Amino acid sequence: MIITSGYRVGPLEVEEVLLDHPAVEQVGVVGVPDDTRGEVIKAFVELAPNADGDDDLRAALRDRARDRLAEYEYPREIEFVDELPKTASGKIRRVELREDDEEA
Image (cartoon, rainbow, N blue to C red; front, side, top):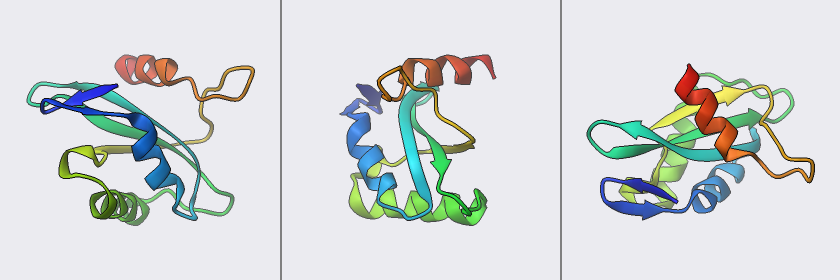
């Protein structure tokens, strides 16, 4: 659960909206610390083959989330990654995403 600006946000809801975009292969959503909001929503996006992770796609994903989710639920940060960390059963390891973000 992500708590941003006093609201509780489930990462799956945000992930489902972003996964609906044809350029997105996989996505992992986590909360990252923020001085103003407590946490902000950050999406780690693994691109579909032949998709370009550029500012235009970042804006398109943000707009898609804003259109389909509440104002406080859209990802304030979007990072494109080559591969998302997964468990042996194929689930995305959100804990590892948070840890990698804190180290950066």
